[in-house]
Amino acid sequence: GQQLNQSPQSMFIQEGEDVSMNCTSSSIFNTWLWYKQDPGEGPVLLIALYKAGELTSNGRLTAQFGITRKDSFLNISASIPSDVGIYFCEKGGSEKLVFGKGTKLTVNP
Amino acid sequence: DAGVTQSPTHLIKTRGQQVTLRCSPKSGHDTVSWYQQALGQGPQFIFQYYEEEERQRGNFPDRFSGHQFPNYSSELNVNALLLGDSALYLCASSLLQGAGSPLHFGNGTRLTVT
Image 1 (cartoon, rainbow over the protein chains, first blue to last red):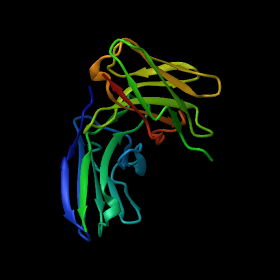
Image 2: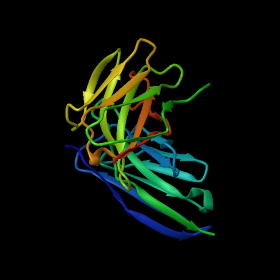
Image 3: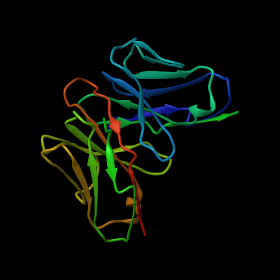
């Protein structure tokens, strides 16, 4: 089946630092979606990408849909304590829905 | 506008028992997907319902079954519970039409099987 590889698995950073994480796949996707999950809650959509090469921002978050359609990255600038959580990428579309295993972010104040 | 609501929030069951989890989708959404999330893992797709029928299914045994009602709400049933079924069960709603329609998740039902 389709696999999504997220890296890194976990990150420990200082408040104010920038963060970068990525998601790769062996197959081509038409849509990349990035979610954040806080403890005890369901994932919440951060950014959706629909075109190869697309670069989209949402406040301090920036995500790009790789030109090969097999990868995507998510950047967080000037991290703050509330950025703590688990970040997931998802292959969107009508096919079976697949999530990566997540990147756990810890921000030290 | 209510988002996705799930009930109950927590549940403790014994091996061999059966459980039913419930989900009400976000207003205006017609598709409901169910996920199992083990501790420290990403959500694993169980199945998706649209127009009261199972539209897609992940790699889960037949012990996992579901239903969608005319008002788009949905149930997840698990029979003959195993210890390994302990997990957070997430429901997500979306619109079927449109490529990559984002999922709106509920806060999940935490199932513990003892």
